[in-house]
Length: 68
Picture 1 (cartoon, rainbow, N blue to C red):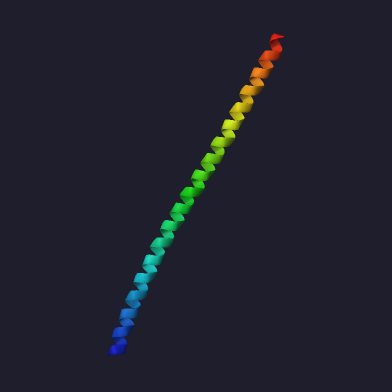
Picture 2 (cartoon, rainbow, N blue to C red; picture 1 turned 45 degrees about the vertical axis):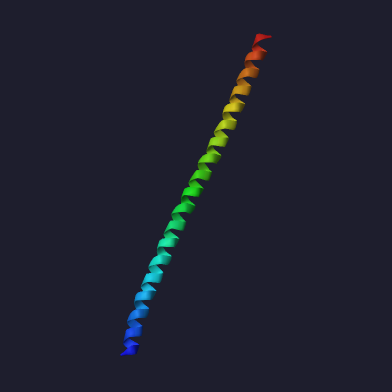
């Protein structure tokens, strides 16, 4: 009798622990993906900002050399 009770209790606890571990891992995965996406967007923003600065510098230099 006690062996059957322990077996049923152990299975329930194992299922609960695995469910909690699965939820924690899922949350960790979602946060990791969000962090990677934000990092990628920041990188693209920085590359775009540098491209705009270079474009403006080239445009200003070409206009100033045309006026001479």
